[in-house]
Image 1 (cartoon, one colour):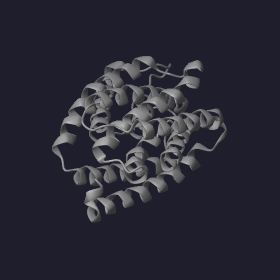
Image 2 (cartoon, helix red, strand yellow; image 1 turned 30 degrees about the horizontal axis):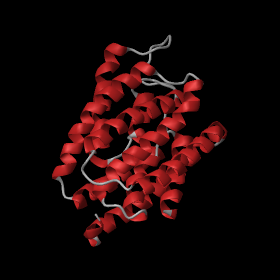
Image 3 (cartoon, one colour; image 1 turned 45 degrees about the vertical axis):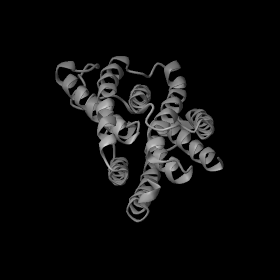
Length: 258
């Protein structure tokens, strides 16, 4: 229970600061920290990430930072793809899922080490707004990819959504973070529905995890704009690399834990 509280607080803080990152640690934390099976950790992770993301979203809603139409397109297509990802998850050996998850974590870490161009991508119109004719297909493709990963691995996908919103659709970083959180809520809800009933959920651990994540996300969201985002992203990337190595090694040498 103590481990669940500690990891939950960490995940909430990362979501509050960066709008992403927490979900990539939730499954390893629940499997190796809280002792859940992978089958139980995936829906529990989606429940925790969805609720904590919704909490981190609240102050950004009040600030009017969410791009609602983009969130609807990416989140809607992602919700449908989450069911396909969950179906593939059921067909795979848990060890393969964990190794794939470690590879995904490395991809996320590398993405965070790269500098993000905050000036807008090729879909942004010169006078403001979005060139929907060019970017609608890209928005749908991004939603499908992120939704599939949500269902397959139990992640929210913010580490993929935010770069796509900035580089493809030309959103600023604050707007991309806020919009990403709403998309994560949508995808997490769909992923949880897709995995519902596969394994019993320990609601005691889940409640402790969620309470800690909500507390962490609310506290972090208040100071997010006053901290050096790039430094936080780089530090988190190295943490992700370490956890990815641990997950991959455990999947190989200790398959029973999966």
